[in-house]
Length: 101
Image (cartoon, rainbow, N blue to C red; front, side, top):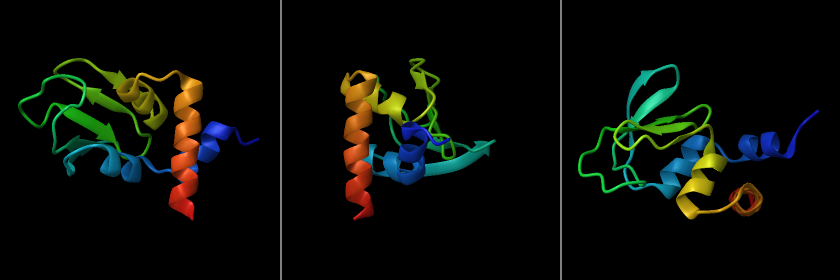
């Protein structure tokens, strides 16, 4: 049984989502799918790159400076845009459909 969130995540990869929604670029791997993000954390007044990490496989994210974290691109989209789950999911579905056409 496939859930709508699983279909969304299959159509919108974390790699593509973060590359288009964050300033910076993918950095060196730190293990188990985690990569440093060569950019600043979007959740606080970050002045040094390197504290924000993203998992290219699951979409999870973590900032070791401010503590912001989440388990996937939906959680990131909710947090960065101040949305509830339903709003973020709907917006990401639209983005995913546009990317496929």
